[in-house]
Length: 63
Image 1 (cartoon, rainbow, N blue to C red):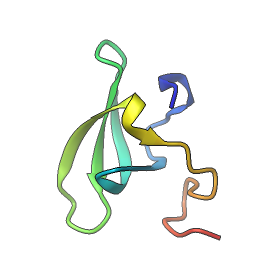
Image 2: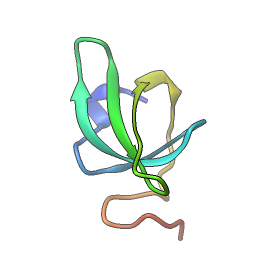
Image 3: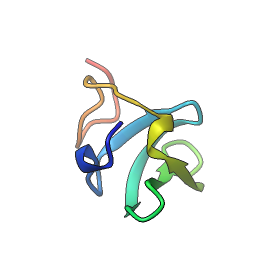
Image 4: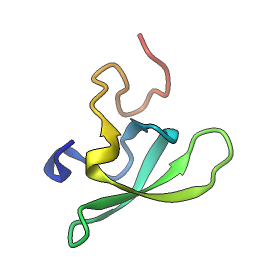
């Protein structure tokens, strides 16, 4: 996923699970996410993020 498409507060999915973007590191092309289930923080490169249009801001479920 392109870093320009990401915003703080949006939900994203990666191989590590679903999490909320809490910071964007443009210099390293990565984001820091807080995992939905255990609230652990993890830095993930943007190319690891799965484009999931059904996972949108304000909702942590698929529709």
